[in-house]
Every structure is written in structure tokens, then in C-alpha cells.
Image (cartoon, rainbow, N blue to C red; front, side, top):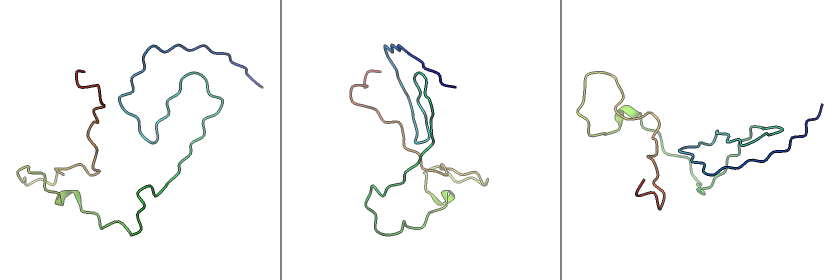
Length: 89
């Protein structure tokens, strides 16, 4: 069975605060969305990465506690990026 859809979509403003590699932004109808992933060596690395450090060994400047709670994220996260022209928002 085939469906033929004609759409007219008007978007005055679309603000996306965050999108990741696995995000899908769909506006309107899509016949088929196939997941795909490509890995590229965009940094031109030629050697293996150095050994990872356990997050509990990262110096955060926070006073040491007796609990086993991690003081740093297990995955280093990038902070929000302020784009040029957004200083007053």
C-alpha cells in the first residue's frame, strides 16, 4: 500500500538546545528512517589512546569524603557552548 502525502510546513522559529549523534529531528513525514553509524578517524590519530584513568582518581578540588561516591562524571562531558550573538539571551 502506498501513501502519497503533500505537506506545507511553516516554521517561524525552531530552537534546539541539544542534539547528539543518536538524535533524530523529524519535521513532517518520513517514509523510512534507517539508523546508521559511521566511525572516522577525524583526528588523524596513529597510536592507541593512553590508558584511561578511573574517575575516582581525578582531582576535582572537592574535599575528600569517606564515601565511595564519584566526585567527577564517569564520562567527561563538554559544557554548554555559547554561540556568537547569544550573549544577551
